Image (cartoon, rainbow, N blue to C red; front, side):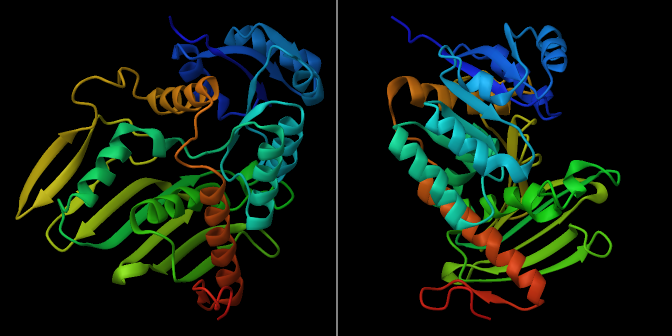
Length: 343
């Protein structure tokens, strides 16, 4: 007998939903029941467009719906912590768009609320659940590229002035919006940084960080670098370089190709991410979100632990905070025990 799908609601009608909703509709583990906006008419129009049964003109109204077991929070970054906690206190499981929080204290508050409510809380770094990412981790662990020596990541987009990602009030900025992916990759493959150094270009006086470049010193002499920007051509890059080879994830964050590339001794090999069809990769634009929702819904239904939970989110926020501090100081920040936050 199969497990009933989890009833989901969406807080906000943000543009990112256009990528997530098709994945939700494609998932057998998800029943997408409701969407909320701050305007009832907008919520109703949105619900009709996306074939969602219920529409609410406030976030509070959706949280009061007993049929909604879990919520996907796609609100602006500045609202993530508050509404994650409010949803958890209302008895809902939470999948919150990245970054969940930009300080370890705020991340810990979210997971304290989740523990108190006996609910799941997940930071929406969807790429981590995809088989392409799992395969890359297995190859590194198995020594396919020798000893890991360097991680290099990049993510950039071009958004116009006035976009919420360029808004100080709404928690915008290249590091929080884009750098969170790169930081999550560095941490996933190389552990927790010992020292970070970031430089930034502001979006005018008093503006958000428009571009950020960073170098991170990792355990075992691994070095990592990443660059992000909100006014640059689109880049999606992740390379894992070892003493005997290199792994390239051609589209690391959205995972649209069905393979990754392994180079050794001048030979290039394309390795399928899902060779036996376990994950059913049929929709390149939305598979990564379907798999994320599948993973979270399965954990909710079964009462299982997820691989990336509170300690991971707190560590992620710690590194983001240190990078921001380093960029403000234009100096390195030490993250080793006893030296945390020190120049």
